[in-house]
Length: 79
Image (cartoon, rainbow, N blue to C red; front, top):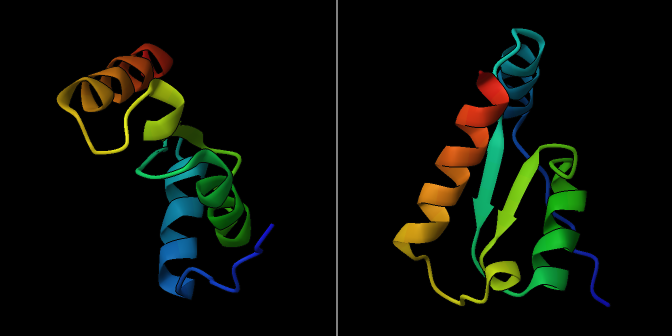
């Protein structure tokens, strides 16, 4: 189980924090195998956001329905 050594740039961390504190819903759409992507999300500190991993929806490539799902979910969270 590989734990990546990656991090977000400080300006991105700051922007995400400001958006979150402003009440803006943040979602992450990522493509790939679930365990790999979860490890990356944890390393980047993004695990607390609404996450959509393509393999959890039976897809290995980005598909339009995944984008529509994330749009629907985030609009529901914002209303």
